[in-house]
Length: 417
Image (cartoon, rainbow, N blue to C red):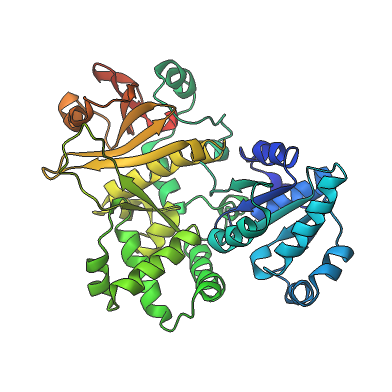
């Protein structure tokens, strides 16, 4: 195995090991190219797992035609990569797991991976509910790339001061990261052209992943939707508008967006509401691309200079910051006990991100400047009557120094995440 394949230490690896040590089956999902196969290679090498990939047509056909024989020839502990390509295996894996649990073997039997979370979990939940540990992998985080400790983000000023003392990233470098994106191959091979990587990525995604979900009759319209959504990252999702732009009906738009969510290309953040709040709040979700590099490529943002001059700058920076926060929770397996929201009311008062965890609420604004004052977070007052426990709140931006702008509200650099 080339040394470079393990060049970047993944925060989530320790969570995968912990799950293997406590569950019979570990399921790893995530978009294509996020590093699932690399992780599997490391597990094969370090823990002695056997490994098969159903991306190989011959192996896939063997698994589909005779699942029982396939599992006999490939005994546990076994990694099955891209298992959603042979859903017939789930029932037989369940049988093996049942037998082994009765013998006292309750952990580390199978690791199953797939880039299509919905199809994968549908097979798993129907056959092995309660016996699995689910891991969701993201593209690289900024902390991983820069070899920094990664914990679930919170507005902890002392921790931020300590973290950012020697961890300074130039604003121009931030824009380079946003346009480059965060897929591991882009950092394993620094000579790889960004546009070449994403052109291949989109083509493969359309030909392989999307076709596994739906019978896509008009690939160009689906690609057009991906491009339009990329230009809307960090903004409200309005299905009717998209239907008019793309030239298909609303049900088709909803179906295609479900496919993009299932393939971990995009995700939605719902609006926040409390009984104690004003009722006139927006009901539409906001859309975010999971990778800013892919969003920039689809939006024809080809360089950091282009992004800095683009109307998309603010939304791409917001997407970058929100993604980094979400990754910090996912990489520590705290995302399932944490909720992310945004706020906007009829008067256009807005809060970019609301984090609710363990009965506490944190308010975040995402900006691409350095100097701010209390009036820039006046919307925070709209949640002053919240029933949840309040924490410190923040504007996360390109500042190099940490400073307060009002009681419990700080301006902090994006490297605090």
